[in-house]
Image 1 (tube, one colour):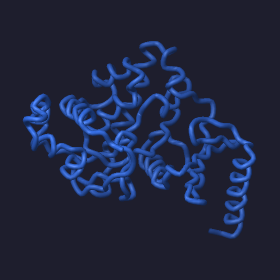
Image 2 (cartoon, helix red, strand yellow):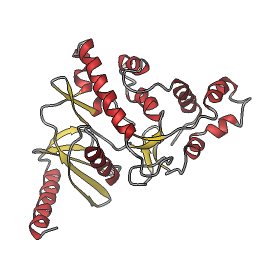
Image 3 (cartoon, one colour):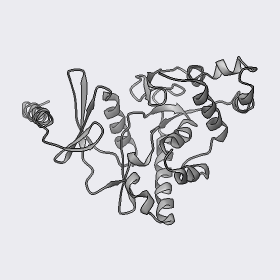
Length: 267
């Protein structure tokens, strides 16, 4: 990096830290703060992997995502500096005001973007991992886990083997597990949190998909299951997901995931 660029970067970092310390920023949501045309995301849980994932998607697909401007660490906290998406609203804020045609259009756009994600070649086919080979991260599973060298190892972590090994205790869900037994799954790239709060829209179009902290390579059915969790407050979106308007259907796997969520308490 040239001296001029190093000085410019250092000045930007110092400016960001000073404005955060003095409270000179526009709060957006959670750990994200707007500073001019930049959005700064920081907390003890923010990982550099999120920035790498966002840039990977921006470079290899047509999916609109914020451009990553800088990433730095200080006092055990990661700071991701990205562009602020102007004149856009979260789908959470505008969904209820949309017509049926507008909702179907958003779903069709989203389905196209999910298909792009699924067509990406995984760095290590068959592995369940983040884009840089680091552990995955998921809110329901409470933190980091993996990476796993196979889907079977991932399933063992989720509890599949335990449930199958105790048929009398879990008789009520054995049929669902049998329907999935023996299936072979590809791993595909997934966002894993496509709720309306992570989709920004402008003029009826998806302007950006944000918050790639859960993104990674997962079994092909995983995005479908996660869509229901990310849209718990939007039953009409869930119905659109069930109809196939957003991604491929994996109803048997979704049923198994539902049982696992009820059996195990993660902490």
